[in-house]
Image 1 (cartoon, rainbow, N blue to C red):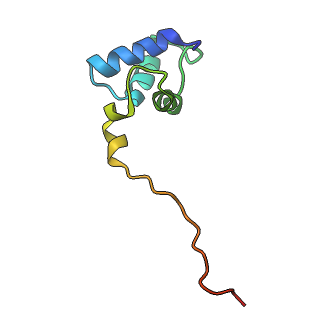
Image 2: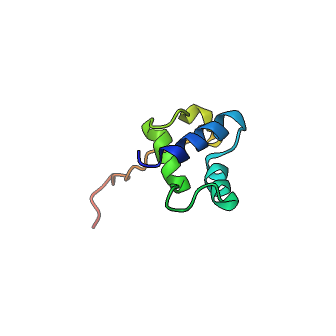
Amino acid sequence: MKKSDFIEYVNKHFSEDDWSLDVCANRSLAIGEFSSNQTVCTRTLYNYVDQGLMDSRNCDLPEKLKRNTKIHRIRKNKRKPG
C-alpha cells in the first residue's frame, strides 16, 4: 500500500482511541496531519477492512454487525404470463 503512514495512523487511533474509520479519515485532514494526496477516502478504508489489509476486522465495527444483508432474488412466475 502506498499510503502506509496514513494506514498506521488510522490503525492506531481506531484501536487505542476508539475512533471510527470515518473520524480517522476526516480528522486527519481537518487537523492537517495529512494532505488529501496522502489519505484515502472512508469507503476505501472500509474496503481495506473487508479485504483484511488492515489490523482491524469486521467484528470490530459495531454497525457492520448490526446490519443484515439479504440476497436479492428474482421471483419466478408460477404461470407463464400472457
